[in-house]
Length: 600
Image (cartoon, rainbow, N blue to C red; front, side, top):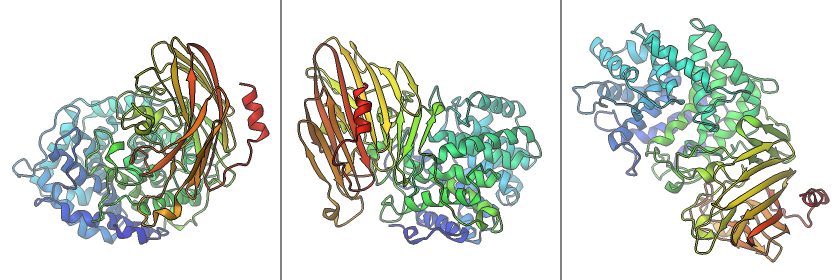
């Protein structure tokens, strides 16, 4: 276990010490030439050598701002990483990182080196011998000679080229201009960028905005108009994105790459670096948003025994991962430490940490989410009209569930043949005779407002569904009009409730209670309460105990579920779903909820 769990994370010194506490266990995993971090044996879509280089590079997201901010704790670590940098870029050394090709993972890892050229040019480049400088330039300049995905990756090349400019090296001006123009094409409105097709998620914040704010910080004198535009877009999205966090600092579990964990708050760090605040979010609120999220994450059982971060979310779990998650990938979270480039006297560090209370409801059309919270901001719930990209693992679960909660993280499918293996929380799933269960996987059309999310979808050939979700405080009503050309079986679930807490020894003390009858199914306990109540069309309730390790935050869960028999033709299903952060099931369904359901 990592000693960072004992860090109070209140001051700049605490945050610098946390970065060192996260990096220190990695030093014994460095290769002999220090150019690779060998952190495990699970595989990714790229080879083990590239994975080792990735781990090495991602630590620099913390070391570079620490050196820029004069943190003395970084010095002994930098000696190791500087040696690795020299060897990794030397074609004559056995640990050379190799020549790259098109769409190469090593392009991703070049981004932080471009930032290093900008923030610490004397340490990262000036301290090298002329031959070493030439090796570094030649290796990084490969990014200008190969094709890459037309998404946030193009910002990696931007950072490399502005780094070249900072130290007086030749810049590929055409590439730089084209990449920046292409990034403009990814911008929509209200501060939102899309990464691929319609996909909007954390990548807007920890990629497009993060790199844009680094650009603004570095390029004010060269490109003031674009720098101002990047800052203004960040200012627009800052209060919207703050709605993704509850009072404990928990971010909304939604979308892909969640194994990056406390990268969730790296956008706040980049805002501080570039001087971005917003109405209602001054330095104190910004500091609170960042530190609460960091404190939450570093208390979770996300480390191996030796203190190394694992692949997973709330605990080590390869089931939830994407194909690009290698053992060192979770250290993308080190981007949160950009704020350490700011000196102790900066207003961010001088400010008193303050809470931020978002509005009770926010309809964010750009990301297709309606975000709600309880009065105490103990839980954020987001209702979605779908945001699919059809590329990575478990995308139906990561984007297409009806609701996502900071209290009840979602689950992923192990195998869709049974409800137990499917772990279909916050979904309606259908199947025919001897068929697999089918969930929502994209929408034909949708509309959303603060009061309603409506969408049409077809989970199977010959099946069409018109759905409406109507939020009411800690409740929401779901209405489905299902037209099918054959008999089907249906199952619809509330949230997944943890049966115990990952990492706790005395799990039985917080075991969840559950019950079901012909009209409802509920589960409740110290770690939250949820229930689903049949109002029209369902046949019975059941509490499913899914396969272990299907949920992102809890290894063992219970999922309250309603069953329905659907004849050929058209059937209407209406249910009410309740979710609370504490052990507090309702005695009755509120009149307001029943009235809304009656209108379906």
